[in-house]
Image (cartoon, rainbow, N blue to C red):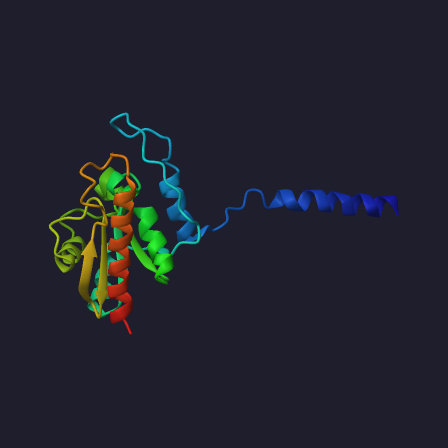
Length: 201
């Protein structure tokens, strides 16, 4: 009887340890949150601190690629895509308000092209600025290049609106964000989400 109790106790103790090495799939929303928040209070290349931001883990971000964005355009889909980088202070300035307004406006999915690998090493994702998918997407959004922050709305494969989201009052990426700037950003994202919601039905 004592031997049986001892075996049961050992099983109870060993089972929780068995799963310690398993890596849980955190999903795109949490991956996005961690990629931005992990830079909080760390130094940029210029020695200044990254802007500290907080991101809800229940966000609508879904990671994608230039190729997949081009496929959606070719398939005449309705979608929203954000091009940004956790290392870009322009992106870090707008992302909290981009997500806040998305929640308010009932936006379920925002596709995200992470520009960070492109900044660090263009070869990381096999994308170069001469890549055909990159060229097709920049042409569809009508911008010469994608390197900081850009949100675009597509309806039936046609771009209906785009914005960096940054307030015109923010003249420098690293400057402190004022209440006026926040209101500008919220209103900008609100309006572009309204464009999406009113046209996709």
